[in-house]
Image (cartoon, rainbow, N blue to C red):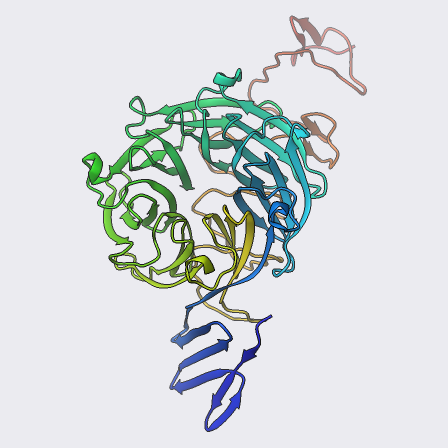
Length: 528
C-alpha cells in the first residue's frame, strides 16, 4: 500500500497530509483536492453553483488484480481472458485459451477471488474459444468463436455454474445460420443479438426458453445489410442497434423494433473504403450516449464521434488520432463512458486513455495509465482488451499478462446528498432504490430479478406481451400456465384447441354439448 503524504491548507493552516483549497463566494463553492502519493499526483475539482455539481478527475490507479497460475497467480482459468462483466459483488469473465467461464468475487476491490468455473467438456458442451458474454438476471449468455455457438448458463448459485442450453451454427450441424465466428452479443428482453464475423451477418436469437433457443432472423452483408463485412461489435439503445464491421470499416444503425424484420437505417464508412468518415479503419469499440456515438478504431488508432440524432444520416463531428491529437490511442479498441469522461483501451500502447467529452464535438485526451513495460506505472496492463465500469472501479482483462485488473477511478463518495436533478450516462446502484414519484422510462427495461407491485399494473403498448413460466391470478403457486382462483368473465369468443377439463361441481344435462376437442355450454337451455 502506498504511503500517502497529504497537505492541508484551510485559511492559514498548513498540515502535512492533504492539499485542500476551499473558496466560498456567494452561493458558489469550489474545492480543489490534491493527493500526493509515492508515484502519482491526483487532482480533483468540485464545483457547486446554482444547484449544479461537477467533478474533474485526472488519475486512475491500479488497486487489485488476479493472474493466471501460468504466470504464478491464483487464477486457474485466466489464460487469454476475454469479456468482463461486474454485477454487484461478482465478476464474470472467460478464458479463450482454456475454454472456461469463471465467476469471481470482487466485494473487496483490492482482492479478486475465484469462486467457480465451468470448462468445455466438463459441464459445458459448446465453450470452445469463448469470446464474449452478457449477464442478465440469473443467466450468463456466452458466445464461443470456435464452437460457433451461444451458450446459456444458470449463475443463480455462483458456486455452481450450470449449462441450461445452447444453439449452434449450421456449419457445425446446428440450427442457426448466422453465428459462424461470433464476435459480440447484446441481450434485451427475449432476444439475443449476435454478430457473426465469418458470416458477415447479424443473427437474432429467441432466448425466451433457454433450453429451446431458435433463430428468428438474420441480416446479411450485401443483402439486407449494406456494410456488414467482418461484423464485430455492437451496442443497443432503445429499438436501435449500433454495429461496427471491422473489414468494411463501417458503422451502421439497425432498426430492431421488429426483431423478426430488422433493417439498416444508415451507415457510414471510412474514406479508405470511399466513405465520409476519416478515422474508422478497423472499427472495433463503440459506446452511445445521448445523440452521439463514440467509436474506437484499432487501425486508425483513433476515437471518432458521430452525431446519430438522425438515424438516417450519421454524421462525423470529431476525431482524435494517435500521434496527432492524442498520445495513447495506438490500437484503440473498447471503451466505456462515465460522466464527461471516456476510458479507451489502447492495446498497442498498453494503456488506458482518458478522454474529456464534456464538449463531444471537441474531445481531448486528459490523462492516461500505461504498463510499466512502456514506461508507465501500471504493473499489469500488457495488451488490455476488454473493460467494464462498475461505480468507481474499472475492470480490465489483460491479454499478455493473463490477468484481470481493477482500477480505481476517483469519484464522489458521500453518505448523503440532496440533488434536484441528476443526469448521468451510467447509473449502478448496489443497494435499494426508493422513488417517491413517477419513473419515466424511454428505453428498454431489463429486469434480472422479481417484480413486485403493490398497486395496479397496466400495459398500453401496441405490441405483444410475453411471459415465461406459469401465471397465477389469486394464487402465488400456479400449477398450470394460467391458474385462476376466482371467477372468469369472457365477453368475447373463447377458442380452445385442446380438451377442456372440469374439476369441482357442475350441472350435467342438455346444457353441455360435446364437440370435437371438448365441450360447450349452451346459454339457452334447461339444466337437469
